Amino acid sequence: MGKTIANKKDVNNKAGYVVKPIAVKDIEKEADFGTFKITRTRDCIAYTNYVGYSVITKPYTTTPEGKATELSLYAWLNYALEQKEYLEQHKDEKHADFDLTNGEWLEQIKIITEANLTKPCVVFTDVDYATDEALNHIKWLNDKTKQLQEAMTATPPEEDEKQNTEEFGRAVGDENLRNNLQLDNIEGD
Image (cartoon, rainbow, N blue to C red; front, side, top):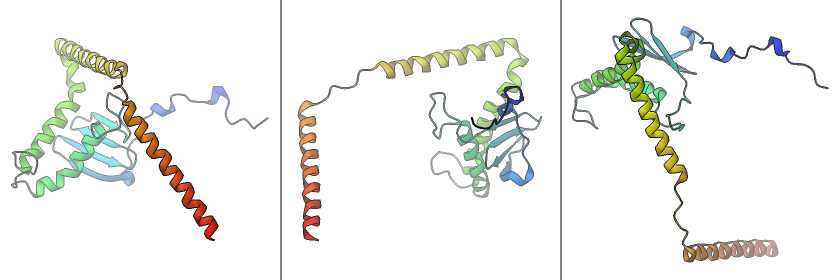
């Protein structure tokens, strides 16, 4: 038998839920947006507002659909962090993608970030607001679930038999050509 690594009573199954503070030596980049700060380390990005509310997200955070795309909290915070310095330096220039100046776009980034990330801090200050937000979120989740179900149950388009036959013929011809070339190389040596 192999050697015992740990006894069941010694294992802390909740160890992965511990939030470790960010050490100054681990900070790769940090930006202060006035009412909040974004800090990036090798392992995470942290959002912290002026009252101390913090959100820490990892690079592999995904969308509600379970896809690791640019549409994630991590990607948004990283975008804001990376763009801040440039947008401040060129604040009076027109933004390349929007009908705004870079300074106006930076203000929009601040508003979007703060409005979405501070919602958990304020949502419970009013029971009606908290209920409405919960119901809206559940409705949104139900709509996404329906979209996912439709995508999963959709029948694939019918296959084109003629195209499949032609493709198979090309594949066989390519394979035969490769085999003949290999034989020529062996015989020529």
